[in-house]
Image (cartoon, rainbow, N blue to C red; front, side, top):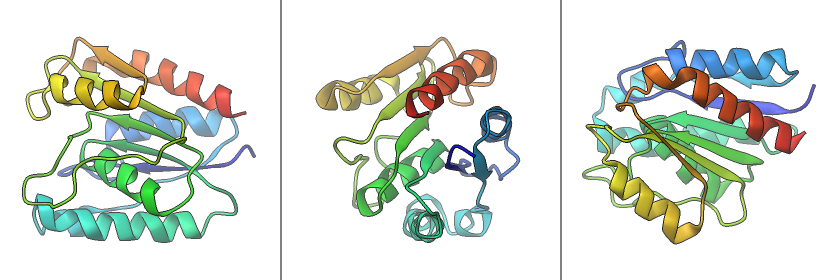
Length: 172
């Protein structure tokens, strides 16, 4: 086995969400162990009140890993994964459709310096404007793949999977 990957779904989705499921299958086919925590009970609290419990659940999952895991997240899952990376060691971050902030939550998006990070976002994201993610990536010199897609990134799954495979190979 190559290592552990924790994949976090977005708000209103679940552990079997399409992007998270496809990336888990991709990783498992390459010898990685995966886990997909279920955050739906936290999401019932509303966006801002779901962040801290999601981050706490991720920290506990990270602590149970033998080595720093790769964190993958979509939307709220990406936001929580990024914040968890500030508090626990992670091998890399793969963040999709990432909100730069959650209205009502005090902390904005941030990632730990030095952690390999890849951002994937849709030009037509109706929930998280691409310009805000571009500015975040530019300020931190992070790679950003912008796709002709919306927040769900459903039309871009092959491109996302290819980018994810590239990240995993870089860590092997």
